[in-house]
Image (tube, rainbow, N blue to C red; front, side, top):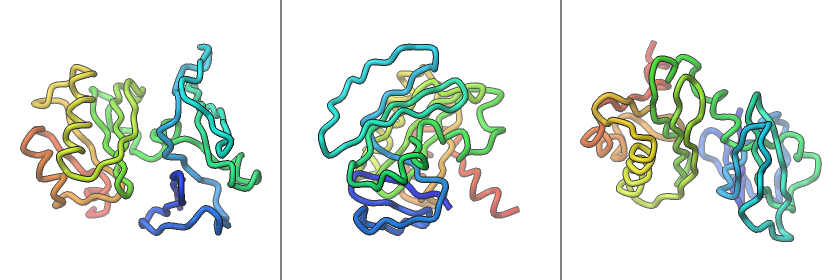
Length: 192
């Protein structure tokens, strides 16, 4: 089971919250959803462009050709430091490998009131960001901004949803009025 780390708690795949001060997980996968991160190629030098406060620890992790520096709450036990990765490095493991191999696409992963938006092409991440939202309109705004920044076409480039969202949700219905191809691969897989 995947656990997602926010600033104040851990969320399991089912949406249950676990306060940080009571954290005791037997897991190999604790995935940070912090917005304080920088994603870069391994061979590049990175410059941290955000403050790291005394209540935070700065971690740097690698996956294939990518590297990510991000913060975690310092109150986490040092034992978890090796188990924590950032969502930007884990997204390839959380979505089916066959998506975005033939074209460019938008991946939206929803967890609680956060939406992870990634533009992928040939299984490479071209754009990645994490947004907190309160309304469906905000979700649409963030996805549309990613579409425009990556020069995607809403008539041909698909949007794939994952996480805590269903195909009959109000977010999905709103997206269908703006994007031609809105798909939920995890639901299709479970229906087979």
